[in-house]
Length: 344
Image (tube, rainbow, N blue to C red; front, top):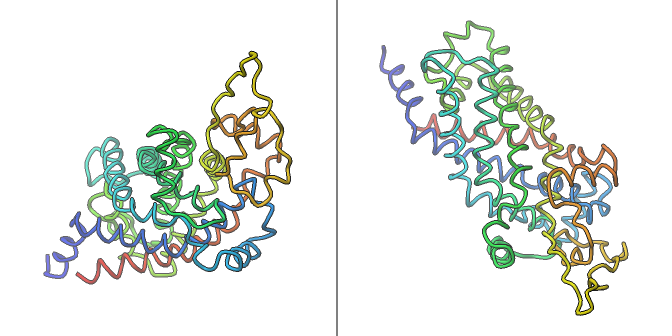
């Protein structure tokens, strides 16, 4: 083995470099794509979605009413947990892949990659649930706030359990990691135009090792195509769960109404709230306490009530900005990762 080959192999097998590059690349993609995520959440939130006619109108309205910084409301929460989430995904993916492979030299099937990815997504929901909850609460508010304020408010009102509101929907959505990794690998293999066993990394249980191998055997256009297809696949398969998750986490859990001294529930607790009261009001608003039943109390109830009220189309609301962001996010992610890896 020549010196360059040895250096390349060492770089591919350096877990610290993989983790660092992957985390920084993930943050770069987060920053680039976050405005699209904010628009997506606004479309998915029933109390404020009516304010926006289209993706472009949503962007211009948010910038006009909340300044450019409004597009980045809630970003501190995912930024703060990026490294932890990244490490959990890498470790769990390696674990689930090693459970399926006879050896690290075995070539995983697309099905095995999908299973490992889905498993890592479910495990990652342990960190993703409170992160997403705080982020969505901030994004749904039309007034300035901070992640610390939102987190403290949730903890004071509902404790640690409240921070995991919507965990089932989050785990189901994050199964999309399976579709993402499988689509990326399937597209990469198709575009490689070479014998696959001679052009892949030696450690098939490592996400970053596979990513580095892809960068070595694919051109930039091919990488962007693979990343774009993976991003679209990852969202299309699980997007309805993302809508459900947003609605659950953007609303507050409702306590049962306490009976009046005469044994009859308080009329105020059951008094209907006029629709106008919700105009321009975020999901976090306390006006929800006036409802007798919380339509977003669980994954199933959210599916049922959303479908009854708005039809099947509601489960794909906000999909357009989500798919559009796949291109800039993948460009930023791959460019950052390659720049870091090839700098050392």
